[in-house]
Figure 1 (cartoon, rainbow, N blue to C red):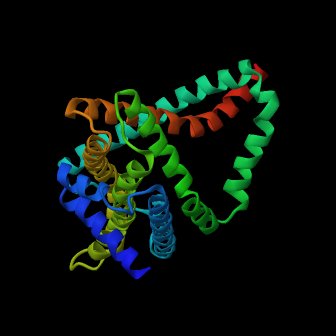
Figure 2 (tube, rainbow, N blue to C red; figure 1 turned 180 degrees about the vertical axis):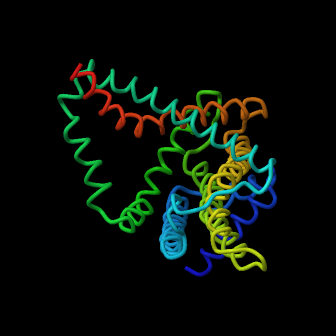
Figure 3 (spheres, rainbow, N blue to C red; figure 1 turned 90 degrees about the horizontal axis):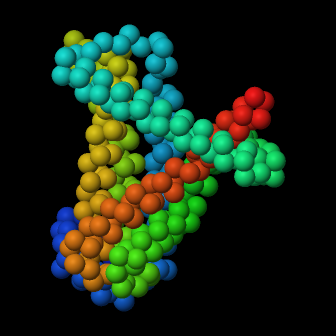
Length: 288
């Protein structure tokens, strides 16, 4: 067990710090490059990430006060510009989600699915959101990580195969997991950054507890957005190498395959929340 854990750390370190065709070709040739190893790694990473999320939630509840009690101020015009752009993009995404919800609402009504399954789906969602404690939802999410991982890898594998890929699903999942494990933990650790910076700011000479609170809310929005873009860009680069190596593709086919796979996955993953929101739109359409 200890040897397998060390092997996982070495593999993740290799793909993260030395990205390239040679690195992924080496990892691909290992005897452990199979679906079983990939799912075990993803499950372990999900559990660790969930424990970090529970810790973050506990620390935040103890230290952070509600935003309506914070005396907000902007330390510079530059930060105001960044924060304003971030809020604008978020508002546009929210508007887009509502437009998708309207579309799904129309589909719920005119397909007949609203009468067939709406009550069950809506009741299930409400039960998950209101009846199950937050920490239990976090643990459940960790245990279901392998399922979502298989869906993601499956989508990428199918789309890449359409573009001429000839890889084996188990090895592709293994390379995917070698990228997903460190990325999952990195995202969880980055979530601690706003809280850590805010705590440091609050104890600086001439600063105050309220200043730390402001920086927490500011960094929670701008830092999370910026960091997510950087992590996503690097993730796509690593997926490109894994796809090129495992599916034996030319560079341009690998690029097209990865980009289209990501777009298909993104659309697929937005179906669920928009579909649930569409239930409300469907109810409104039926009343009208």
